[in-house]
Image 1 (cartoon, rainbow, N blue to C red):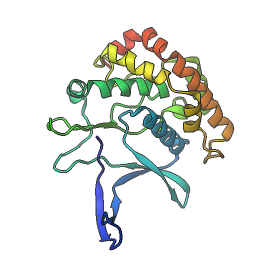
Image 2: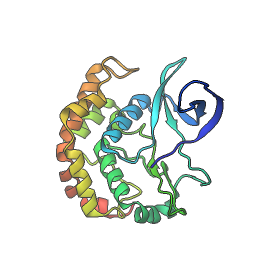
Image 3: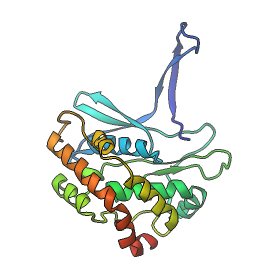
Length: 239
């Protein structure tokens, strides 16, 4: 279960049987930039895809700034627990404590072409009574898997590995990874299109690009188990 950091609780509303209160949450705002020109779109689509699979991805929301839509990645938090980013020497421990979540995360990253995972993990490791494991940051997946969105779409569609290294390569359980790949392969075409298509141009992402990405992922989900089998020597080797 994921929980998120409250910044401030303000006034409590007098009406309503649940006694609701206004509050603000901590978040990291992400924008399109020179290194990630489609960051906001990539983050939002990755989140929507992850939600359909219950993949361990931190929640986020679209928000509006003077420069247009931005993505607010909510800050993970649990009362009384320090949650720094997972370090390289903790990967073994994370894989041992969260084997199913790790398998789903690896399968998901392979699906969206996310080769930039190593520094983007949070996990509760010293509290057996509290389970918390989540990943964040997808700016270099999907349309950002290559320098040009058209190249990214082409490589996703052709079934290229794209994820050359991953913190859980060599640590993920093979049986679980194949099972999670099968789950992704069973995603319906309609769900993938709904996750990718915004119904209008979105920042620099045209409707044509959105549709092309959806079709590429529809193809890729069929190949995913084959991608795992073909590149098993890479996936079984520690990065």
